[in-house]
Length: 99
Image 1: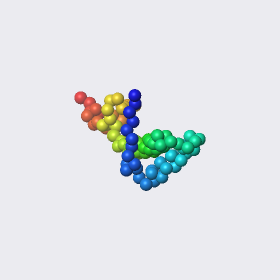
Image 2: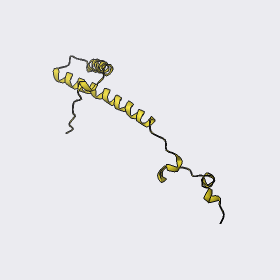
Image 3: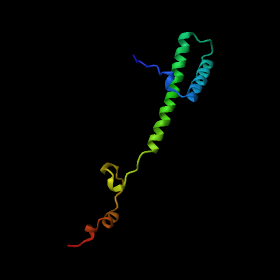
């Protein structure tokens, strides 16, 4: 059995609280009849979950954008897609020196 923790309303901003109220209204309209207390709690829980999911998705996309780009010389072996031997030789003067 899946156990869902209820999300506290204190975790949401004022604009997100308004979104929750709108989602509750749309979910009760979809229900088609007057909701009982138990159904109201489930609808509120679902609305909070949807708004939190949107917030987490939005924050995760910001984190991907803000990711620091590494210099090619600092890249890991698994991250290298192409390798330029000529650029490597021009960057390393010891590679050009003949013995």
